[in-house]
Length: 216
Image (cartoon, helix red, strand yellow):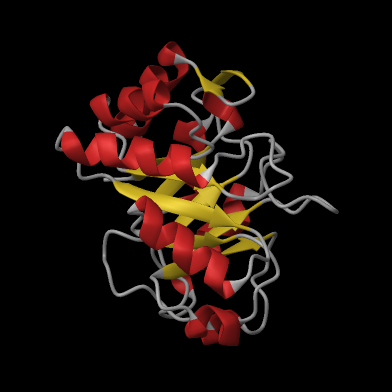
């Protein structure tokens, strides 16, 4: 089964929508320049309410070149399961963190040092995420990868398994992305929005349906 991660969650309403529809992972953006930035206090409140209602989906904080102390504090304070490192963090920095984390890469091929990054022990987390590369941007651009090239990530050793595919995925193309790239999971933010930071009920519902029916 292909895992679904909806990123850029900014409201409890959207978090509950995703949880009710069976989404497995939620992403909360802590990057100050993101249009989907969420405060630590608001994230903590949303995650606490999800847990209170019995939802066990994975909640991930998205960080871009943040200090280790900032990452660790937000993950712990908000009750998050892991950190997604979406900037230029190197392997030694990732390994130094006291919280579970995985690396997001921009563009293909993967960097030469990809195999040096720590791999999350939890099977409920991806080994890494791969996003489109847009100069000066750290994700959330709506640009797509070459999904045929992404499929090669399944065949190049242990580092290249259990990856999240991001970049330009929508309800109308997600089945094609899954069929071509065969990722462990898909990561969508703008592709299921009705406005920046606001998820569309119909788009999320359609996305879930398309993913569940996709052929891998």
